[in-house]
Image (cartoon, rainbow over all chains, first blue to last red; front, side, top):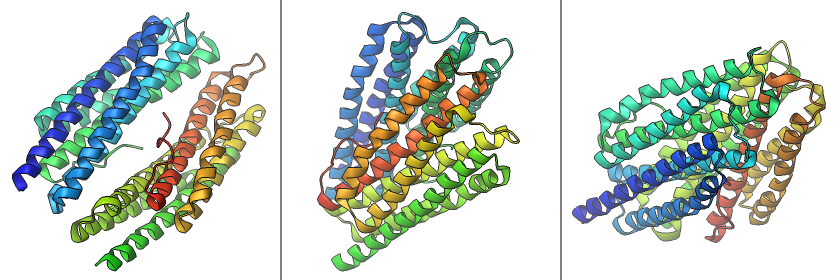
Length: 219
Length: 219
């Protein structure tokens, strides 16, 4: 019974890593659509989100069946609930990629991100995408030290967000209100993707060690 | 055993309604701080969030103990997991109130919301607060029809968000980039509070009827 439980739990984590891979592609696609003004790619990210939603439902059903049939207790129970939370967060990261893609689509044939803030914004996007890619490996390998490291690297995202505000609000900003609002919201979306990545990584720490490294998602 | 299970489950829902009440106060306080520039009140909302976090942890522990000791299956199991998700969303609504309070604090002694967009923004805040208050009653009374109605009323929030963008991006906007960025982010926070309120209400429908009314949180 216990062996079966752990086999099925392993299969849930394989699914979670696969969803993380889908999310990574969504973040990458949304960013490319944003920075190049590619409406077709933006559409693909937006319509592709349904597949992530479906994958989440499948994992949820698997987790519920594990809980119902095996009635795990103590640590095992908490691991299954952690998996349920991880899949919710991964799906949310997909939603946030859709938000990015929608801003891209809204501004076509223009590009939502003006040249002068492109370095900061594209770095935020790269950090977010990199974090999602690392989370995928962290889930697949149950890599606790990489998970803890990810939490530390989130600091760069905070710095980039502050820098983007400084750029938007400086006297040198010549791009007007619309671009500023777009960039502020885009920054928020990438920041939230990073927050969720850290939170998922921390849940992996919990799954492996039984201990929470730090509070989950930052406010 | 089963009676004990349902008594303990009832007590979880009493706790959830109490947390919803704390969230309602946080939304109201953050909005008042925002619209009046009251730094002290903003601080109280920010520091008060720790109590919501603690209440969430207490509910989670209670739910885990229910799952461990009673090993519910099928519908009962899903109800406990739904309660775990509801408390996560309620806590998140508290975090979003903190974000509003932080923008209020950042602009003191000024007021972040310019007069010209105050009607729209304060209506968004009122809709969000009202929705949180109704969710509290929906949880306490397991009121399915009120829960379904709440989902419909969320449409007003969408309209207000669109109106706020139209106002920010019109030629009449004279308040510059900083105020526009603040208002765009504030609009996002209130919209997310409303999204979570709808999602929590829908989980109540699921808890009572065993069926999901519609997809949970909107992207």
